[in-house]
Image 1 (cartoon, rainbow, N blue to C red):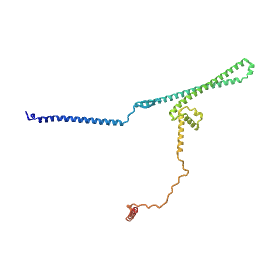
Image 2: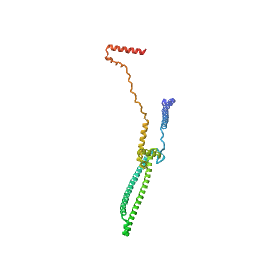
Image 3: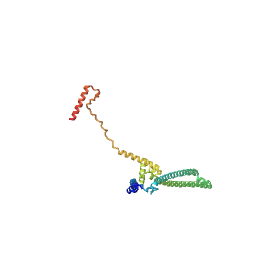
Image 4: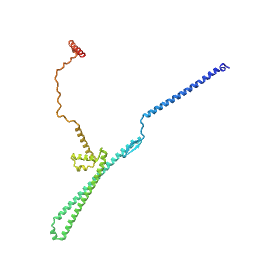
Length: 304
């Protein structure tokens, strides 16, 4: 056997050497784990700070749609606003189309009324001419000569007079009906115009409407013409002119009043003209010395 095998001290030394790497490895592993845990805690703390510093997006936002207010996710807000804008535009188009259709129907109705009125008036004139011929007859002589013929002519005249009265009654009835329909259509147009004006004129109210009407009358429009305006476009034009005149009046009132007297001209003070300083490069020796003496004397006086 060798000396190392028989020597207990040597065996202990060898065991210590074999155990040393394992201990070092265990210590390194523990250190790495501690460092990893520390870094993880640091990163978690930094992430928490960053999260706390950033604003948190709300889960729901308030949005108005079709006259009512709703709480919706933020992503749906833009979609609802686009839908609302599209719906409003389609409603405006439908309102304009309806107004055009009503105006067209009113024009057609007016054309029919005028044609029928012209026809009835022509019928009345023709009947009047025939009645005048009957009135020109000598009825006393006719009845003396032939009672039967005179009676027949009298019946014809009365039939013409009845036909004339019927035509007049029909004309009056048609005119009354036409005026009633026009008044109803005008009332509807005014109501629709009011709805448009509420949307397109800020602060629209009956009081503002009266103010606009008064302005139109002050500019030469008759009260009847102003009262008959149903088209909101015409009302907006009058209101635009009114607001422009008010703006001009305010600007004029804000300007300072012009001075009664024109500003006085500045008085020129006459004095001795300072001697121009000559360029030192163009001076001769004597001039240069004089200049330097004056400069030195001036500096001395300022120091004293």
